[in-house]
Image (cartoon, rainbow, N blue to C red):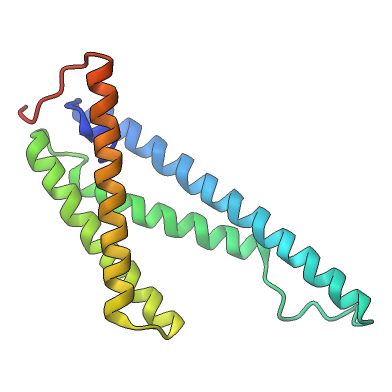
Length: 158
């Protein structure tokens, strides 16, 4: 939403692009996770076979589960700004709502990672929040540069 919403577009275009980006991003994350975990699985299985432990695959990560978790996590995170700003016509208000919803999401994901991983709650939350906001600012800036380069009319009014 911050990328496509970085230039003043219609709500319809934002929703179509936002949904397409959600599906593409979630699919990419899921496939990437599957490939990574599958490689890890095969290496670990080969090492266990070398040690004569051929039948024990318990405890090895499931590539399909990891892919599904990554897909769902990305889709959930991408849904926040899409739902928060996807129906707002004012570009300024839309950007504020997307930033607010994304900030809540970043903080929530950071807190969840600290809880699940046993890490420091404040550090994990702030690291994820600041990293996410920096990524959004970078994306917005790149979109503005391309819009300027292609002489697209960029405004903050609707």
